Image (cartoon, rainbow, N blue to C red; front, top):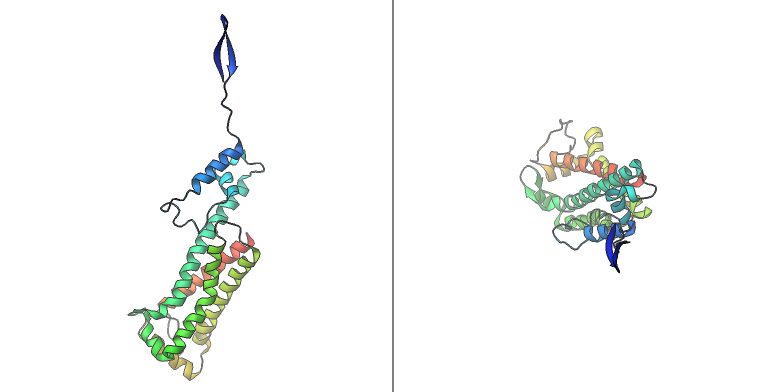
Length: 231
């Protein structure tokens, strides 16, 4: 663009001092805008805060060298996976540690569980059960907005796999294969009166409806953890 200037009796054209912003300045401005300390907009930003490269690929793809539609799609899908996994693993931590403390008729009878196993043992079991999911949640906050190290991804996969396997061993092995009389009596005392949808198999313990929801959650978080690891 040119502007007219007067030189003596005539006019001449000279370029304006308004250069186009560089690609780096555009991306930096976008990063500052999206990462502004807005408590309302960024309330859940710890779940999947976009990196500089992700912002550039999402908002300025034509200015990013090596950009392809496939690479942009992979970045976007990884952000969705991370956000979903972070939300569900926090939910899993809460339900694993707190559900037996609640008394919701037909769903969870915490008083029955405490009476069956004893108050001291119940508290110790709660503390032990909170360590591993708590560590999984801690990694989300520790590496928020950055690249997850390989050991974090491996831990998420290992924790979710162990949790799913524990559910199988605690519930479905006794349900299908049976167990000893003492264990049958313990399960009956802890979960009497809760909602059941699976057909009975003699007097074998069977997962109630609430635990079926928990097991579905465990399976989903395991699949997401594996997807994050391979992505």
